[in-house]
Length: 209
Length: 209
DNA sequence: TCACTTTCATAATGAACACTATGGAAAGTA
DNA sequence: TACTTTCCATAGTGTTCATTATGAAAGTGA
Image (cartoon, rainbow over all chains, first blue to last red; front, side, top):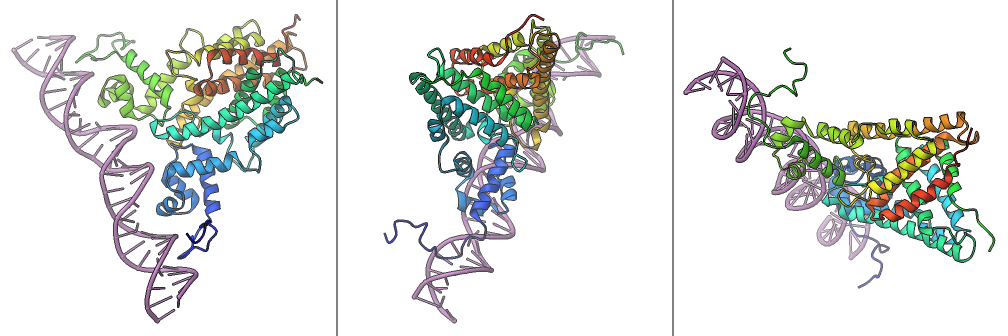
């Protein structure tokens, strides 16, 4: 063992002729538009501008490529969504930011409409079990994070004792999922923002403890 | 033209050896579980208990079979969903019934979890454009029906003038879509019913005109 | 019984699928 | 320049896809 980090060490032989990062981005956009199972490797290679052998040596196989795209999609910044939820001023604030961000994110002109996690594999064959499990896990983790944040607010008196943390968290995440479908159906940004503001009436106002 | 109703007239030749209605139901359940593009004809014939040629002579092709399943799924009773929405006591009542019915339907033990319209083809290739358009149309029609019902309530004084009919309708339909995903992720009936009740806080109370 | 019509089971169709074997070209090191 | 390593392009692999050709079987009408 000469180096502990082979990825940093200078690689011998002919270097990659394409930008791995850009190719991954292109694959992400393709999956985002047309789903996981319903996107063929041929469509991926066309979108990425590389040939099939290059895809397989650089990314493994179709499943690994998708999971790497998903990782990039779900964690674009330094902090994860559960961390951002935990650190928000209140559960209510976290929910509001989640909804407003979704309204804006799902209707961006430079990206496919809707949410990859919501739409890439809402149903599928046995061949996509692992991918669907990975998507479900992201949804579960985010929902549970918001639920725990709401439970904390109830304990600390920022939300009334009668509030239902699970129901509030599930409702908020259901809205995020549903807004993705609406965005895919062509509903615009303003309509989704109005929706988000209207839905926040279901959250009890923050209280001082 | 001897008969106006050829389906009633005695058919010549060898009769069907399987129950067309039961086969259609089996196909519906299969599509419901594993989606449109992601369900193969081989899986369909296995679930329906018939061979491929029987499927094609009885139902046309895979797309026609799905559309017929969708028709049965979306219109099981004598009245359509938009009709039920229009005839409800109020827009608020319609929304509440929609949400509670969804909570119960999406978590029934004897059916696949979630909603066929929400999950069968949330994304897909060009081969499923017509199917996806048919699903979108159902979502659009139902959403618009609820929106019109809310607009009427505002006109007639049952909802405050400040209420946003489009936002209320979109929010309610987004919740239905999202509840389907939650049900598929394993969230139970009680949790979805709590969610529905919590979400109804976003609807202004009905008022006398 | 005998045409006639339609369905059945078997098997095969070409196309698309995910994935890879192979050999030469490219770019580094010595 | 010789050599090593890796990548790329071509062309395939076997499998599965949706769909159908074929001929025997099972009914109806005369």
